[in-house]
Image (cartoon, rainbow, N blue to C red; front, side, top):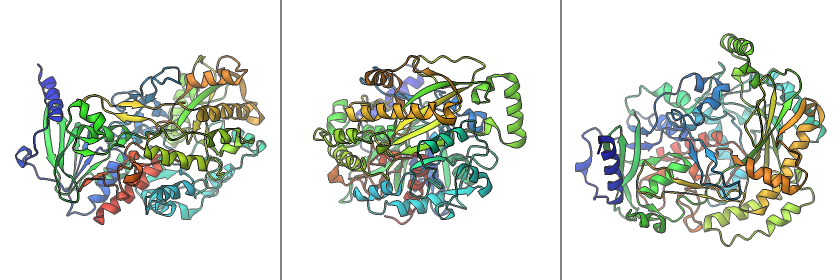
Length: 612
């Protein structure tokens, strides 16, 4: 057996048949106060903030590399070059989805220092104040809109001029934005050819323009702010939080370090004590101890995986794999949620200069020069225009609402029942957007769509912000190098499908009328006319995907309600284990997640510093 395979076997065997933890297994290196598992968004925010105290030592274990500056990362328009690329992306897939054409769904996750902030679309959107307040109402004191706003502001520096935003009907409330935080936030310096026609069409449809969607009310159409600096370069967690602080002597980063399990010992009345972690680096199986805490920041897929490999989870799942149960916590890996999304595509008239025109050498050369010399143009931009709309936009007669009220929730687990009941209440709350329509100035693959060189395209992305499906993320093997099984249960209920059908009709009307419709030559995806609701449903099943916003698998809820972590983000039943990543968010919110995650990590750092 080769050395690498032997090490893999040793790690899997150690997890299946762990020996009692002893200090003799620890390396001779110094013991950090805090071990942070995962060098993504939340992990690097915590590392930067905790290491502000020179008397505190922090070690981050990251599976990927330290590369966070290259052309594919830094140049905003190149983002799609990272998706599916193993140098940047874990490239997870779901199980085949029964109600979505029996297809596995692609689920990218960033790999490397910076995590998914290296590969995301850079939107910095926030949900409504009602939704953040609801997190507190679910049983999490201190997690409300005012607290989130404080930490939104702490995380960012927003740079813009009133003159550049006024043509789009926007007037930012300076009290809602940060001025001296690490993350650089800007208003797009370049707008694609779809923005003004789409805004004008929205006016004709009665969709209001939002002056500042980040101030607690995000209903309407707006141009999103971006995690892009004033030099038109991506601002990631790595460039914003790690790079300025990487030379701190009390901050240690270990890359290529894949954590297999947590090392636990029986604790006192305060719970199980996490003494350290076991990880694979190259062909070496290593152990690292923490003197204070271990903090999981591995994300909604890998955090529950590490917990289950460590014997923390549902005994019926981990016990049958030969993993001794350390802590019975049945909701670990349950209640997975995501924003479901589908797309349809139009070929545009004439020779509009959209991102697809970059395939023409002359255009590519000109745009590259424009970006290099003036930091603007197609390469500086990502899709910017979003319409966040309440359910009543597509359900004026309350037909879907009535169906949703009749949904039976008894079969769902405790945590799912509580959040699903809240979603039923949200259906009638017009302050909460249910649909996100965004406009993309490029061809995106879809069922039956064929790309024709030399043509310009528009893709409409439609996102369901509060779907009623609940999935799971669980291990099926004690091998830490095997990915968890990700089940979405997409379209497993009639309500999500009905909302999607009506949203498709509305989004298509939006795209084919008014000034925006005047640009359209032909709809190419779907490739054939959809005449009935059944036709639309079949197209949606074939087109459905994820918006890459997984949450909920280690939810922050009261333990009696099926929660996994308390409001201080400590795992129930443990003395010194916290989770700080998207897995703790208990219910979907009407926002792309990164701004919310920066706020969560900033707040978590303050909680930890206070010793809560």
